[in-house]
Length: 148
Ligand SMILES: [Zn+2]
Image 1: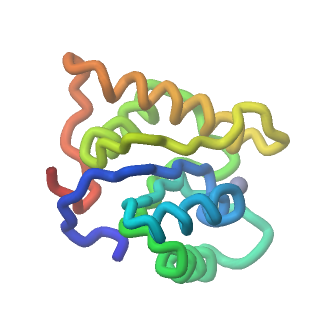
Image 2: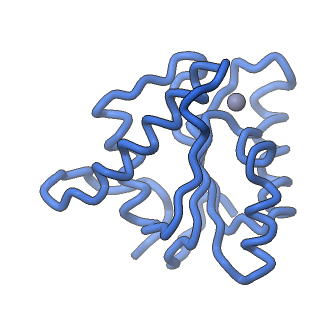
């Protein structure tokens, strides 16, 4: 499911800091969107330093959750867990994905949170959305497995 070549425009894209954040914060919304035939992909900036489960277990759980929620596409970037930063490089990496998926709605973490990754992901994703709309900004080719 995760990196198959799929040609679609996302109706809603959920971006989160860690693999299980999407399911815990907006899983119900994605489930309802999928039930209404909307396409709800998700993007995480993965976190593997969590104290619960190994990276492999979390990846397997995320894949299972994506199936249950009807998430048609899911990708995890390689930003460092516990050290996500709102840098131009990271904004461009997310903007690449946004340009391929072209979501109508983006769900982001609230920008005030105890976990720094969650707060940063909120502002990083927000800024990446703006950047993705700037035609003169070259984000390079996306490695999403998706095509336009
Ligand atoms: Zn998290």
